Length: 343
Ligand SMILES: *Cc1c(COP(=O)(O)O)cnc(C)c1O
Image (cartoon, rainbow, N blue to C red; front, top):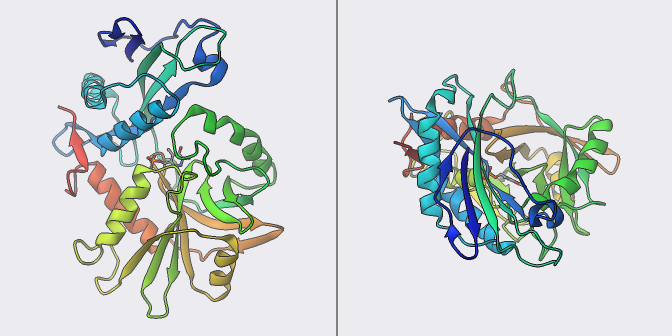
């Protein structure tokens, strides 16, 4: 693990890479009492030339800086942190699995370590980065998720913290997730407001594909209004979808097909209406862990909205994005410098 600590007198310490192990923390540490904990999720892959690669890591570093600012943790130099993460990954390169679908998960974390009774910003902190090999989210190919639309508990709200990767955003979702699982659903579809706006799926951003009257497709994801986590996968899906067919063609999609991307509110009644008109083509969740996960059905107020079944599990756009993003991550397809080597 990589470890760096901060105190208000000497600033950030000399970084250390040392064996994975427990931390010693004062029981009154800010992170333990007030959840002053922020994190990132990234992955490393081995490229065709054998060098480890990261996917758009500067995006994760920028998001980590914003998270630190939001909970008043001390600022840090994210370019320097990225250099250290590259060093750590290079050192631990033998742990990066090369099988398709496998990768090395990277978890940069910053905790507030101020030990005091007062409810105030933490002027002491610790950055640590740990690694773990991970396998594919779906062991036997993508299996469409069943979602329970939930609006009596909310993940995020206007003016809240849902747009940042703060530890405190996640534990309140554990109980609703358990209740949804007891009813036979895989994940929660977080809804918000009177109009039942779709926000996120578990800890993934969400996309739907709707057929237009002219036969082309609308690709819709909720706008970043502060309740939506600005996912790197979300941004990448929007960019690649927006580039088809003018700047690149996505795998197995016709070059004549136009994809119109929209970042805008998306409501449950709209989904039901499109489904009834036969225009709802596919829906999927996106995030670093899964890349693209198909949505099979959505339980909402006693009704099940069933999405079209696709042979590969994922629909045409979902599989095109999954294929193209994994190719870019592994250095098999060059796109706008998104894949960054560590050495
Ligand atoms: C991390 C996360 C995502 C996905 O972000 P990526 O950068 O694509 O991994 C989506 N929603 C929530 C709530 C998250 O925490």
